[in-house]
Length: 156
Image (tube, rainbow, N blue to C red; front, top):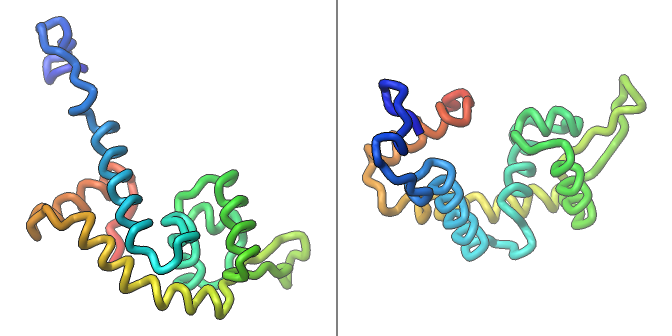
């Protein structure tokens, strides 16, 4: 770890405490969020990443797998498994693109929309529980900082 002068922290006698590093803290915060998600979910089989995928399809309409990857930030290998699991549960459906018959289009089903309608109020509670220890200014600062770190646009 280097300070503003480029000197290594170790050279100055400072110990490296992994539990105070950004990666560790982000992972622990995410683990806590996932535990809250599972405890508060309307569907014990639905993961937070599957929920995000369904939200993207609801908000943006039917999409190709590549478009879902770009919109959700989920990698290509992971999205394949998510699509398979959501399809097996009847939450999404696949169809051929009208213009390019080789391209598969993924759309949310009425069953998927019904699950989202049940999940959205719970998702709002999940967010509230995740950030319950933060005051309004800290919440705003956290979300702003995470957008910068994640290199994503501010959104609505």
